[in-house]
Length: 584
Image (cartoon, rainbow, N blue to C red):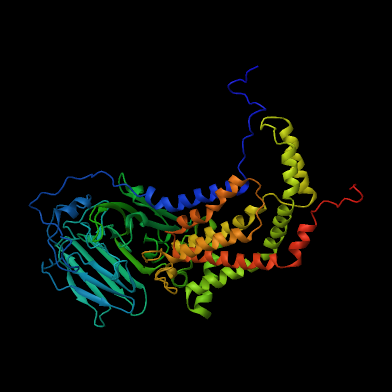
């Protein structure tokens, strides 16, 4: 009788099942593809414009103008700041009027940064961090000087508006005698605004105080940082920008991107230990004085940068909410030790993710080794990787014995497979074949998944190190031998570390007992080093260094095991009893 269309036939060859090694390889490749493609697949999308373009006759701040130069108040910026149309004065002036006069830009130069201030709006036009450079090799600028928005430390009025556009009028500028502070004051006779900025010589902290009144009554306002922040030289800079605040009531850090404000400003009110902006490696954090409730507003500012002319949505922030606001302002790297000294809760700004329980201790150990002994993060990673592999060696040794036994059992497994050679995959006797094979494994204490064990053992540390290199500013720009930056792929035309990694993977496979009885699957596994090399080719150099070091240590451990009596003993323990006089 003819076979049915959907049925099987005992005369057809059995379908081959994927081994655990192949399944794990596919899972590992999927994991690598997700990590490799995530930054490109989940870019923030530019929201549609919500305001009309400014008239061509209106003046706008040109990106080519140097930071700190006085500018005519741009209508484009006013369009972004939609709620800030000036109120109309209804009574006589109550305060002396400030003479509208531009003054030379004021530069505050400390050991940590160089800040350029302008009396037009009493705002920040440039904030250069010393000791850090962007991908363009220039000192790192924290301000997006090309953004057509209000500048950092401008004011936002959520309800009642001032009687002038106070972010673009000229203030009187009074520097402190020591050159580390300045006071800005403005009055149109009704609205009075005072800003006091004070910096420290050797600290990333500064003090910011603002006060606004209309006809002598407090005018609630917030202090802004708009249009982008941090390292704008990296690819997809907008995708790494977030606003954040730490809610003391819930003891929780809340993080939001520009997408949260795509339909309008997003407001949060509560008791916040700190609030502000951050990118991957840097933060601008406002720490309010006292325990009063404060307000944070997240904006979506679609603007270009000096490195990316196409406008993209950047997260902007405004903090405060009172008629008078006082903050400590931290602008600097997300360095754990540094953040802890400022405020213990600031440590949470460095997000180690789901593997934080492992990633953070790994980072702390690597950082300690670097500071106390080797003074190089590359060698610290090598040392920590060696120690990890030595600690795990007893587990790996047990697996090596199991794999050696499985290799020695191959003739017996082949005999079982020959016995059931013509059995289809749907044949009930197929279960008998599997039962005999598993019974043989069980009898000799062999784990058929042993080939997956070394890879599974490395996965948690792989994910942990991956997170370390994506959030730790200490790794940013850290060199090792020919590698310029361990947090990025090698900058050579041909990347050396991934090529060495491929070679080590091939050698590792040659040294490891091959228990797979399926030749086609064995051929497939031979491509694994090339696939791994391709996957690691654009990963952070430090992550490649970790995996390469693990491979080299694993090769040494495998060589050691292969030359011990334990390997021969494991193989002999599964040999069938020898026949005597023609009988077993």
